[in-house]
Image 1 (cartoon, rainbow, N blue to C red):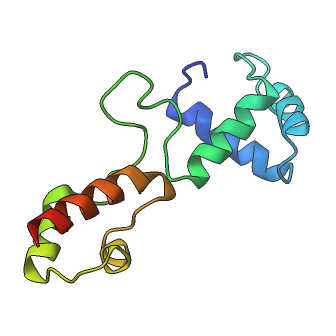
Image 2: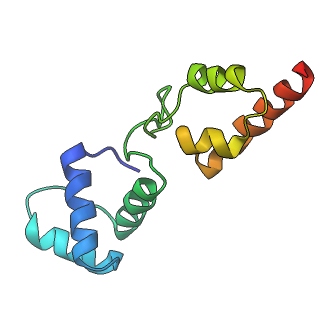
Length: 118
């Protein structure tokens, strides 16, 4: 996805919402409303919406350390929770520190390390 400014991404998502999730209509409306800026392809509207639904931020993390998603939990907090109570489940941890479906690899590693300790 080409890099746009955060304001441009916000406008794209707003227009996408105005068009009730119709990306082609959103691209056309964006061209009408903002004739003097570069015009994203309809697929960009879909990607922006999907990224935001996943809790990620568009345009961030393509080459940086962050994967474009807000940091909702820290490893230290999770480890402290487990240290307090070693029977703490992933479900309990995720209620206090929201985990996302793509955190699966983290969960597996966490469980493997926890099992080897006990």
